Image (cartoon, rainbow, N blue to C red; front, top):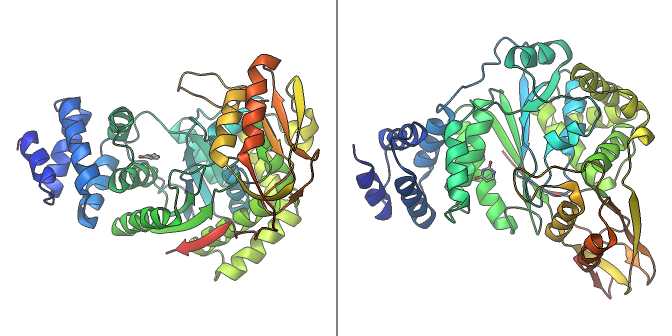
Length: 435
Ligand code: URA
């Protein structure tokens, strides 16, 4: 088999076989196929697309390019959830303990934030003492003992994706439905859970800008999961404004704790309850979505979900007193109150701009090597649908930067708020569920 023929076939929009795809993925992973041939094939895939069978074959080849986690020694249904990335997305911190408190086993491997999106691992690491570097045997034991562990992905998991994603990033081949879907699903499938819930976001702060594209990506990923015999479902959720009020690591952990205490922002709470209801249905802990919702609501009110979160934090070496007394978390040196210079109804809050602003304040990474300031971020004081008068507080801005550095960021945050003269309809946070 010759790589040049595989590239040529895809250039002519012909279907590739499992053998050809295996040849490409194993050859690229072991470096017998060079970057220039891999990037030519990626570009041909971007331009010509792939059929469903090819996407499943690509996902399977990537999934088996490294270790595949075997969770069979863990009793019960192993559940997983994955978000395609958003701004203010701390959902796993609430949904994980919530479903684990009802008997689901959440064995989750998460990622770090990059660019305008945050990552669950960084949020967890902002809890003093907490470690996400746990060996696979300890990970299994923790999930068996308490029902939940959230750790970093091991280097041996889907090495093909690590190489390919870095290559796509610099060859303008990231934006391809088959490549994105197989990249995400290979990692989820290699993590070994029985069920997968995908949170596919659409809007200004998301990978997919339109609901139509998000729907295609979600359907493709659900198809892949089901093609590989896992119960896979997807929610299409709105990212046309940040999720909840808090953006930034410690600020988001505090908002998650507030939600686990039965309070929290309405949109965030609704997303968590819906996600938990679907997962509980997948795990057969609830016989219907409606029953799942009731159970989820109950665990947020009765303190069980919070107790499970504390147990997880403790098991991973974190200082539980911060969860009991969130006021103990450090705050940034400067907390600037940003006020509105015009009046109106909030129609849209550009999540991308808010995500970039939070990153510039120190909450995120522009490059993988950047160090995060856990205290930095933004707390919105107005959301879509709210009325704003001149002088009203739009947001609280938390930073350790000096005035000359944060001043331009304040303007960016101010301009991310788009105001209308007329009242604005509030859209549901979960737009559709695909199963
Ligand atoms: N996230 C991934 O893991 N892979 C992609 O290709 C895009 C987003």
